[in-house]
Image (cartoon, rainbow, N blue to C red):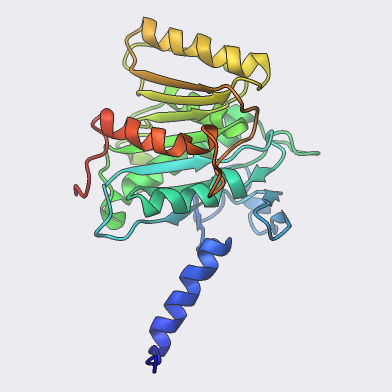
Length: 292
């Protein structure tokens, strides 16, 4: 006879099952009283387009947030990754470029934070990439760094990963950051916005990316069959990083195009890029098993 679970344990198992089925945990707004310039719209509901099969696209984002997906304490490595999904700055593809990856990272000891940022190219949007989406990305880095102890994270092991449009945000965050405002009333604004590493997964607008000595190390993955400005652009960007001595690793998958993201169980070389990313973290001395 199988013993009955206590009610609390049954509820916990149900919550975990739902989470891995696609229902994300609670989000944390990046600004408690609304993002600068969006306060009047912070309570507008987001628009969701989901098919129950992994598709989970969100738009109408006016209250930017992060969704933490944390590893079990006995698995935690102290490393954190902020995930910026793609979607052409008109929507956020939170399925294969967001939550699915976040759960994989957490299962492998890495704290993940899925970022919902304001969309500059949504029809009727008044937002811009540099003034609003980037403010959200930098605020996410500051927020995770401020709460690192609470979440079991090393404050100097916080990186940002982006896909497509989100990859632009990750690259820009590494290109331009600040050490925080020491006299800021808001404690979060006192923290540095510099990521400790960056991961660029088939990002766009690579012609706008620059490489300077001292920038965070970078992991890059894209598909050979992607647009030339992405596949060739990533090869050129890798050489820019190498020229200035920034550690870089590049994977161009010969049978992949744009948008492969992460889908559990994909049996292709491109589908296994997440393992290469974790290996890169270990090789870069950013990840040590079960370190605190």
